[in-house]
Image (cartoon, rainbow, N blue to C red; front, side, top):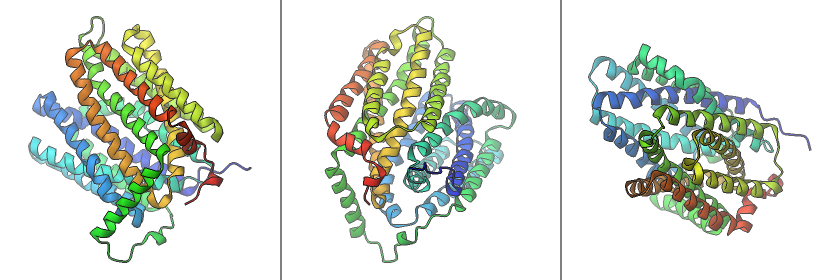
Length: 414
């Protein structure tokens, strides 16, 4: 069978738009993080911004998803980037002429997070339609590689731009990049005429759409198991962040600079893993076994992380980055291919809510453990919880999970 061509016109456009938007988000996010701390001098004020930005992901995707499954998804994608551009430009202009307002920034952060939640859902739902059939693994390898590569390039540049241009001009530049991404996305050609919903959309119809998605998930135990496991492991990983910061700040012989090197080696591992997935085609029948093996190694690596000498910690993070990108690419390609196209936005919305809830719960749990236990034991316990979840949800329901990973394109039905 001839291998599907990946780099079609639509795929090139969506990757270009993603790259443009990601560059702006990396530089803008870096600048804003420093802006809040410089203006308030409070870590609590910064943490409150992060909490505010999580809120829309708990509710908004489920509210919007039924509309997104009935209407052209491209319009959500383009409109989201335009709205983002307008808000960012407004923030930049405000900072040029007026003083910083923390309350105002909280409100704008909430609006930006709402736009981001909708935009992320639209991208997740439309991206599979822009990958040629048979090239899913390569397509997700490219998108997985995009962020770590741009992060390594743009993070040092962001620090230089912050000192030379200042936050206001960075936000205005980010606004221009968001607008450029919207223009690029507008050139994508995707036939969504059958999605034009011409009859009035009532609250009853919305509730019916939600029930349809819930019923589908009830019947798909394998898909549910994958989502539940990802909520646990991603939640535990979110909880590790403050624990690791505290460990490197307080444990003798460790420094914040040593902690920052974690991100470099992990990004390098992710980039290599994504490049490998782009070059090597994994047969459908091998995917479940490979992914379950990765989960065991990944959680084991987390459990022993803080007990290792520092050089081995770096090796540990590099391996986790490499393995994590491989499993993420295989999971994304398999899951998005498996979900019926007409339900994709709603199912992805439930996944988004579940993962956000997991991040909230486990972050609080890890924070509590950090108050009463040695930080090393906190990370070990977190890894053990995620390991247990993988055995209960991925291995314990292996027949159902295997079906999601190993169902070929020719077997899929809408």
